[in-house]
Length: 288
Image (cartoon, rainbow, N blue to C red):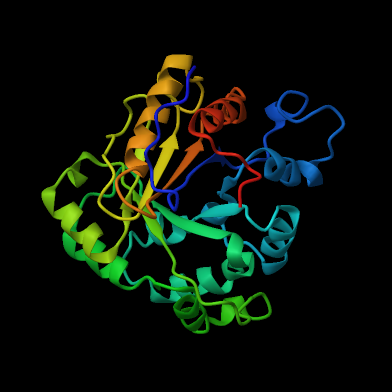
């Protein structure tokens, strides 16, 4: 495989990683024999520039977990954080103020400068409702300072398990991953662009629609498997094709960053495919 011709602005960057890192099938394969489980994230930090933190999707994590994860990786590492499925799958993006406050109070901001984009993955049954989506995106904090202010409105269930310390104010970026074909609607781009939210490019072995990225300064890519969802690996030619797409997207404006996460972990392909793509796009985990 040969690296694509990259003409991206020097201020743009392509980062490649995996969706999660704690998988039994990786032990003795990607992770060397004898590596203790608590050292796995540090190993990820040595080999990748980013990882998608997905435990936050299933339940609110605790501040001590976020602090431990941050301490395990280099300062220039980036975590993408999956938003709570309580918000996306149960509330269906409606009446989310308190749930969002609890999410941001739970310790997300403790990641500090390693906090990267936040992903909202929608269920397949969630159909496109422009008013609901517009209202939800309008309620998202645009910076860490706004997120802290929102987090202070958490409910009583979060008492004694919050992290709302002062942090350097930084912009927050979001990506949306819809899985219903009803989102193939010209109004979607208008809403996302108005709020500066990226439309996720998801490769799902044909299970769900693949959308093209919007016009924001973020491109978010999730590779779930080309031929078998969550299970199949990517061929050399498929990785070359994705590398060329990423380089093209990154070249579309100064500061336009591309984040790619492999979620084909069922048979252990994700870290190996991620390493191969990272080499193709020149994503060196040591770059600062």
